[in-house]
Structure formats: structure tokens, C-alpha cells
Image (cartoon, rainbow, N blue to C red; front, side, top):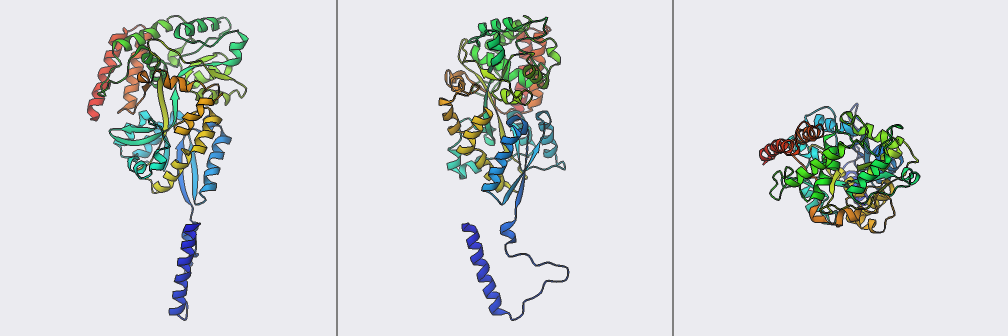
Length: 436
């Protein structure tokens, strides 16, 4: 309102000056239309948002989020480009390579940031945060997605990976959620019914990122290892890493997961969970929201925090970035400030069972009764020194593929854990060295 008032005063002064210095108003040239006095003020700026969250958050939740922002900012229109998650990386790469599609802001995984940075597509948010300390103070210490000393994105929600289970099936079978790795195996043994074709869980071995974050890193953290050491060098082929890989090899050999895992992807895994063919999974808290898109009545919950040698957990995040070539960076930043606001972060954490990456959202979980979120503070705080937070990496797809190959080779009995991890580590280290 203040801006509009200044504009109207300026317009009135200008009109008075014209009236005092001219007797006849000059008419527009033929074929031209006179611009309305408030054309600039009333102009609506459209920003495009490429992401994959409409169904994950629920169309109603997502639509309300946009409607509320546009009500607060009537001069900004948000056009959502929603695509399935598997198509996101390709869409961003095409845009970064100068394709016909352009976006102002977009969802991103940490594994995509290095490539987008190399192509000059992703804005450095460090100056924006420095110029807006009040907004920056709302974010957690792990919210900035830093790569080579610059903030290339912001985690939108933080993702711990833990054992999640179908509440009704567990109640029907008289099972309690496991509280350690031994009980995890016992529960899956109790859930296996080969005649009925039902199992405790499945393993999408076609997805390198899934293998790394949900399986390997979870066990690695609890063995006391890390993916990278303090100097940023590869460390996952350590004795702790070998122990973690060998544990998953031994588990797989027990025959407790749906057969055919080497041909399974995340989409099939979700179908198994939502249909009741499997009743448990190691995944992020969003798994319940995704499963409800298939079965609205499904009830899922996290098991309490586990410990092995340590109480560390594997963490990742999905985040947001601004396109470096966007002509609407100011408007995109306004959307950032809105979506990370206390009101939105508290509401979305509650509505979609995802921990928004703000201090307000983290604090809210201390009193949460959400079955997928109430234990998250325990995952974060029981042994923070041994948590593994997945960071942006160069040539992320190449690194994921190398790790996936190593994991599959070990489970298939083609290579021992040390050999497979050493070979993957050599590929990783070469790419890390090249990025420096």
C-alpha cells in the first residue's frame, strides 16, 4: 500500500505539470494505445516453479500453498510445472543446457547441484542470505545446500531414514516395531509368508541413491563410519564400511525380501507397500504420504530410534534453487521467504509429515504425536557426532552408478565387500579431486 501511495502522488504531480505547460494534450500516434496510468503497478509477474511435489504433498495441500502466497503477493503469479520425480533431473539438465523450457525456481536433490553449478544454471544464494539475516535466522544449520563454498540451494525438508511399518498389519499379526537390528531381522522373519507371496519388505536394487542413503549409510552410521572424512576424501571403504556392506549381504542371503529385487525400482517398491504385499520399509517420512495416494486408509509409523555401535542416522534433504538466468529473482526470493516462513513450515510439517528445514519446524516436533515424526528428534539428537548428512557431490549420477554396481556385485556374490567398495571409492575420489 505504501508503494502504491507513493506512485499515485508521483502520478498526480506529473499530471499537474503537464496541464500547466500544455493547452492541448498530444494524442497517441496512429496504431498506438495509451498505457493506463497504473499499468506498471498492476503488472503481474509470473514465476515458474519446476518440482515433483503436487502428489507427494497432496493436490489440496499444494494448491492451498500457492493460493495463500498469491493472496499475500497479488503481483506475483506462481505457475507450477509438476513432473514425476524420475523426470526431474532430465528436465533440469535440458534447461541448463539452454533448452526451450525455462524456470525461475525449482526443486532439487543435493546430487544434482554439482552438475547444475558446473553449467552455470543455479544461483548462488549466499549473498541473498547475507542481505536478509532475519530470514536466514529462521533456517537450521543444515538447511543451506553448500557446494565448493557457496550456497546453491536450501533444503526444503530434512529426511532421516528409518524403519517404517504398516500399523494395521503389525497389529493384526501381534508384532511390535523393532528397536534394534536383531529385532529388525526377527520381525521380517515373522512377516514372510512365501505361500501368500507376502514379505516384510522389498529392496529396489535398481536405484543407487536408495541403496546408498537408506541401506548402506544407515548401517554405516551405526557402525561408526562416514562417507567422507574431515578433509572431504572418500572414507566409505573403511573397516566400518566393509562391515556395513557385509551386513546387507548377509541379510539379503536370508531370503526375507521380495524376490526379483535386482529389477525393482522405487515405483514398484511403493506399490508393494501400499498394496500390503510388504508391510515395512526403510525410507523417509514422506513414504506414508506417498502410500496414501494409492491407499488413503493406510496407516504407517516409524519405529523408535535404534542403536548399534553408535546411534547415528543417515540424513538427506530435498531442496529448492533459483535459476541463475531467471529474470524474476526478486519475486522468486519472495516465494522462498514465504515457503520457509514459520507459518508455512509448521503447517506443512504437520500436514504432510515432512520435517521442514526451519528452526520452528524442528522445535515443533518436541511435542508432536505424528507417528512418522515424533521420533525424529531422537534420530537427530541421540548421537549427532555419528550422523551422516548426504552432501552435494560432483558428477553425482556417475558416483551413484558406481556405488550401485558395487552394492549389487556384493549382494550377487560376484565380489567381496572390500574389493567392491575399493573400486567404487577410486571412482569417487577421482571425481572429488577433479572438482577441486
